Image 1: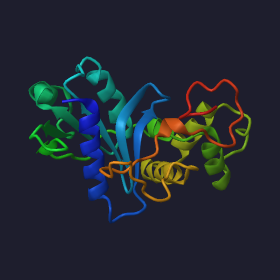
Image 2: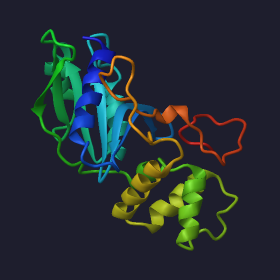
Image 3: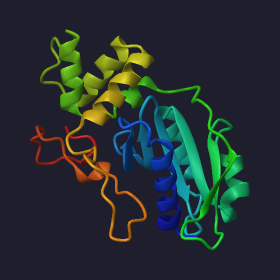
Image 4: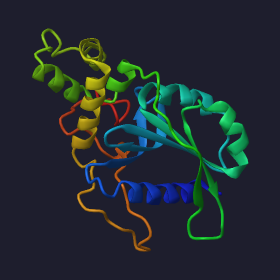
Length: 225
């Protein structure tokens, strides 16, 4: 089973699951930890949910390193795998990860079957969470809370650290989710359907740059300097 087949089925199921909450944002390829790793799909609502896909064409070689990064940032995580990987993947991901298997039943979409439901991440890293903010966003939050003294000209790592040191984890999580939802053009104003009418399109985080960032040499579009 191929990656794009599983991805389409996951988009469909997530769209259905969160249709009652118009504030929910669904993103493809969200970079975390300063772009060190990217999760295949993320849902942003009252939580930050990560979804990783491993198809028949994938190996599991990178999964332990991906787990290490994802575990620092996401409130919940679910891995969606072909039957080929199911047995081994359950020995790699933490017990609180959800596990879903994609089964080919000869229909337009594979059937996504829950093997294990997700739990809450017990060990978020506040600094890794706040690194999802772009520099201008972090500075604006510091200014709004009168915490920007001596920081206006500093690199983003200093702004992230100031926020992580001054706010509770709960506050940081809420700030980050709010900023992700508010980014220009990240939210599709109205759900568009491709020509086959089978599944909705979502914005990719890698498609957009923060409009006020002026650096010519950004390393990644997810985190402009």
